Length: 175
Image (cartoon, rainbow, N blue to C red):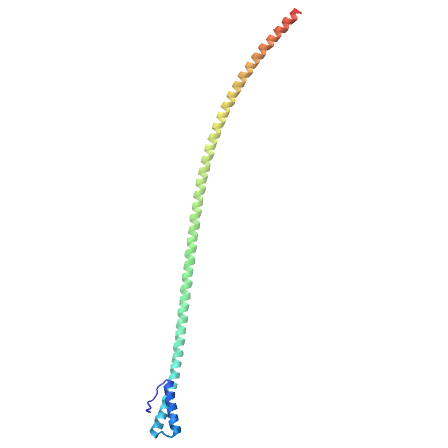
């Protein structure tokens, strides 16, 4: 079995070491194989240290990523906060505008209602005047007809009274 130096990562290197270890135990190894086994151990040690370095650099990169993510998150939060403030300001402004337009519309409604009420009062006043005039005219007519009827009643009563007096006088004369 040939032994090439195993770099950095372990499983293949472990198999080679196990194979070399078995050869050494069985006594079949030559001195060159022993030397190559030692070089494999050296390669594994250097692979282990390289792996440690990679882990350290990976940790450093991870920390850098976390820091940049934290910074990006802070920026996102700031921009979201700013956007929220802007939304609140625009909503507040829109609400104020709605209130102003509602207030204006209410004033206009009140003005038109007031105008309509004035017109209703004028027409009611005019109708009342007409009703009073017609009632006054009807009352005058009723008074005239009552006065005329009263005059006729008085005349007929006077005539009947005269007739009664004449007949009473005539009856007294005969007695």
